Length: 409
Image 1 (cartoon, one colour):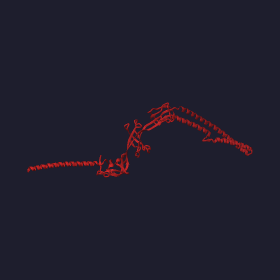
Image 2 (cartoon, rainbow, N blue to C red):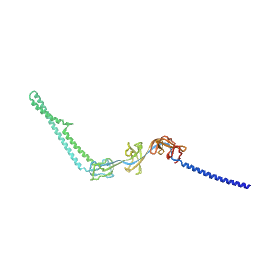
Image 3 (cartoon, rainbow, N blue to C red):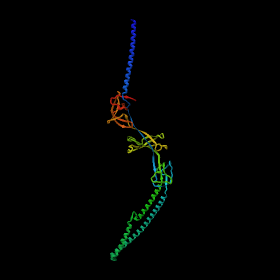
């Protein structure tokens, strides 16, 4: 009996141990399956990135890039065709304003000047001769007129007392009228102190003088001069060659001021202002230079549909040449302490602008918003969002109001 009782307790302990093992195994599998189900359920949620909205200063970041350009690049060509007599500069020479670069042959021109000078002198001599002749003729005709007038007046008196006949009076009167007409022809030529015949000679002399001046000006133009200071960047002129009028012989580059020409969109052109200071980077030199905006085009260029902006490099040195790539950035305050979100957070569907907002329970809400200012990365929200809320930045095509999401960093 005692032995039986002892065997029974051992059996009970064995059975209890087996049950405990079975319960442990069952609990393990139950928990493992639950975890897998939870992980599977978590993996099925849309993964989204979110960003907390805060009031901040909204900046517009504008990138300006372009090529350096000289203050001036001028093509120089002779005004008249002619053989080149002398060339005074070489490629790369620095020249000053007014310096002679090239001279053309002027032998034929000098002969023409001498001929026209002589013609002008002869014309003035003719003028003096005409003036002397006119004056002498004028005095003679005036005296004859005055004498005939006096004679006629005396004959009128004699006729009145019967001392002479009518025929005699008529003869004297005819002489008087002829003398008067001859004098008036000369007198009526005078205008501005000179007779018409003399003025004609004088104008011809002046015309000859102007011809001489034109030839002298042409002679001066046969010297090709630098219009401003700079460096000779191109030369196509050799002594003895024939230079054609209007054909480029030199290019003068003025590097005293170096600028950077950039193109920008209309949104950027609307807020850029002249005088803004910038820091200009020239990659080829590996250096930064101080500069400022000196020009913003007032009108869009038709071909490129963009606006031209010119930057001036304030402290350029001889290392800076035209044609180098340069760039800078400008940050402009658009609105202080406002709410804005990245562009990828904003959706526009069927004319409605909205964002997805993450709620405290892990679900999202599609909320209509009103957009204000824009820049290259962000959009201002003037209605529909409050500071502290979180907006969804990705995977919006899988979302609708009430969708539970998984937030990823």
